[in-house]
Amino acid sequence: MIQDKVVTTSHYVPYLSFAGESSHYLNEKFIKPKVDSFFNALGVVKGDYDVIDAAKYISDLNFLKYQKVPFSYFYETILWDIVKDHSGNISHMVKYCITFDEEVTSKVCEKTRIKYDEIRLNKKPIFYFIYIDFKEVIRFLRLQVKT
Image (cartoon, rainbow, N blue to C red; front, side, top):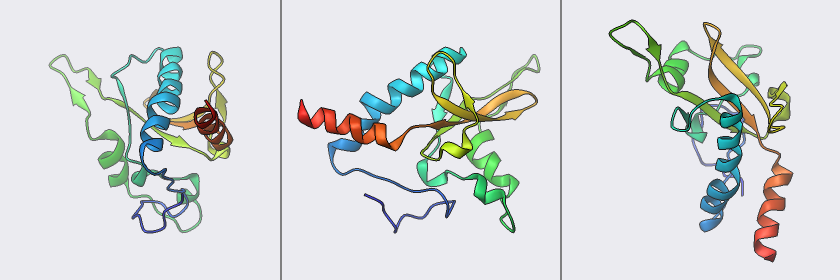
């Protein structure tokens, strides 16, 4: 189901939902395992990454022609948990979002074959776009219903 009454940051990112237990089941049994294997392949420890609220997803289209993404968006959505310890080391939780837009993912994780892209700060990835093929989502749900 596509909801049109949800307030989202971007007008270019679809906001999708499934009714009842389907969304929970899909997240727990399909999407999270893919995300966990992706970050594991990159060497990012479980617990050091977190998904952003889907209503706050943005698209590359938000940066094109007359669109403005205020810096506050990045701070409030991605960088809000930056911490500097007593030794001067800076750390923060890596953020990610799921995208159904293959065009925003120019890289492929060799170990998992998952397409992705990243935003870096001082050469360190701080945010990932992780591509999930919507056809795979439907295939997964269809298989669960049939078994």
